[in-house]
Amino acid sequence: LLTIDSYSKGQSFLNIDQFLSEEFDLVCVEKCAHLQTLWSGYGEIARYLIQTQQDHQSVIVKHIAPPLCGKHPYHWNSKLSHQRKMTSYQVELNWYQHWAQRCLPELNLPRLLTAHQDNESQEILLVLSDLDAQGFTERYHHLDKKRLFSNKQIGDIQNEFGGIRLFYAKN
Image (tube, rainbow, N blue to C red; front, side):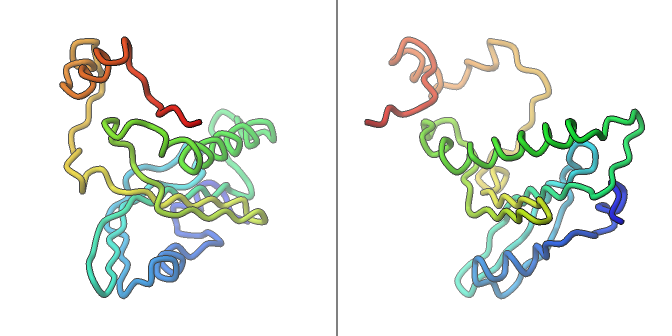
């Protein structure tokens, strides 16, 4: 049986390298950095370098791989807990598929390049553009209002619309 700890040992049903190679017709794919383990060992976020015949780029892969048998130090591994996590990941997938592209470009959100969902294993794979590669390398651990609204573009949006408008109106 897979346990939460077994994910870190690379056990999952989905071969990410193979998926990326086939999806993007790659000549080379390499996982270059583990960025974060998901809550309760439900997978990871990693940076991959991908190379086609024409160019190369880095992408962010969020691999949701729920354990078959969960171990949690506080015994928070109930069916309800699992369902909440999976619903949250499904909402995130739907956000990137249907809503993120409606946001103003000034928000600099990652683009969903492709996604895959396996209903049997419940694995979900989101392949996103890498904001670090686009020059957004700073991380803030706390934002006050001054820092939040100090960006000129965001200020212009706020002044133009009387408040920050996140979405384009679509008829």
